[in-house]
Image 1 (cartoon, rainbow, N blue to C red):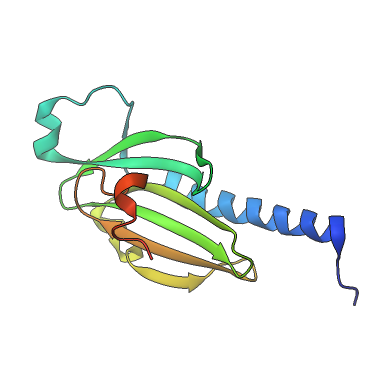
Image 2: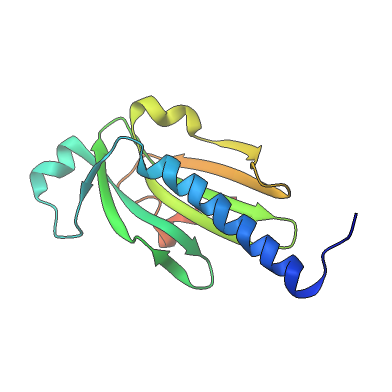
Amino acid sequence: MYVMEGHAGSQNQTLLIVLLIVLVTMSLVFGQSEIYDQEPIKQKYFNKYLSCYRCLFETKELGCLLGSDTCLVPKGSSCMTLIIKNNSGFETMVSDCRSKEQMSDCSYTRASPVFGFWIFSRCCFQNFCNNPQKRILYVP
């Protein structure tokens, strides 16, 4: 068994990170939520829907790199942020809406399918509570 060092090792880690992000993003994208553009939301929606920040790939250093948007779910649902971390300090986030049926995903920590990575899931229940400015209040 050979230990990968240098360029080959970093390529494998990058490939695993991309694979992990794709898997998490697919589970969020194919979930059930109503998608709306970032146009101003009419006042009537504020009483019926929870507005959440959506980003499919985000880092603390660079912000949202893929899929910045707004999503709406019926009241009683939640906004969610997944934080994907590894021991070397790499951290990325995925933010989205979660329907009532998907809220079993809220507030858990588990190992990811990719060795060495962990997934932390946090939900909140106010409009745009998962945007980067407000997220620091509820994310570890």
